[in-house]
Amino acid sequence: MRKALTTSAALAMGLMQLAAVVVHCITIYVAYREMGLISAAVSAILPGGSELYWSIYMWWHYGFFALYVLIIIGFLLLVLFALLLAALASRAATS
Image (cartoon, rainbow, N blue to C red; front, side, top):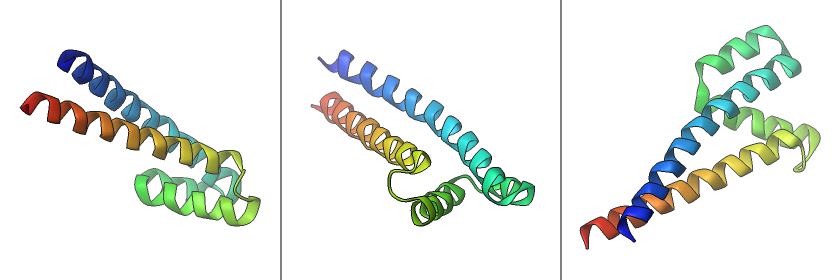
């Protein structure tokens, strides 16, 4: 059970990192489409803040069901799931 849980946590963390890169690339594209090259460059430099800014921007301008907002929510759920698995694996390893 411990090995399966540890393996699952490692896979979830790897998937989370890959998804973070994909989400950031999508954020740069959204920034370019909405505001232009300078916004895309600033978004490329500031990963976490740009995702937060553009998700709020898209939510206010296009509503909750904008594709970008749903992608961000899905990514946040993946992060929570990966952290939960990591915590469970850590707890199982110590007991």
